[in-house]
Length: 137
Image (tube, rainbow, N blue to C red):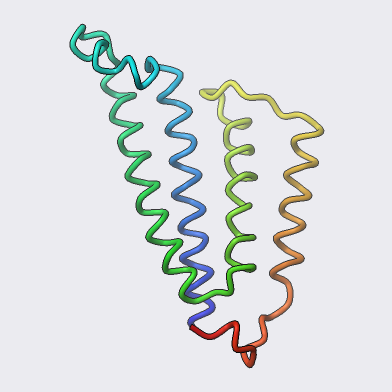
C-alpha cells in the first residue's frame, strides 16, 4: 500500500507541476514581465484572467511540492525522482498538441521525450528491495 501511495503522490506532483508550467506559459504570453506588473496594474492594462491563471499555477506548484514530500516518504529517491521526468514529456506533448500554445512537434524533441519515458520505465520496472536499510524511513 505504501508503494502505491508513493507512486500516486509522485504522479499527483507530476500532474500539478505540468499544469503549473502550462498555466504559466499561457499567462506569460499575455502578461508583461513581472517587474512591470505593478505599473501595468495601476495603468489598468493588465490581463486579469492571465494574472489569475499565473496565481493558480503558483498554487499548483505549492500543492505539487506537498505531493512530492509525501512521495518521498513512501518511495526511494531514485524511483521518485525519475517519475518527475514524466512532467517534461507531458508538458511537451500537451504544449505541442494544444493550439493555444503554438508549439510544434519535432522529431528530435519527440525522440528525446521517448527516451525519457523509456528511462523512467527502466528505472521503475524492477521492484525495490524491501530489505535494504536505504528503503526504510
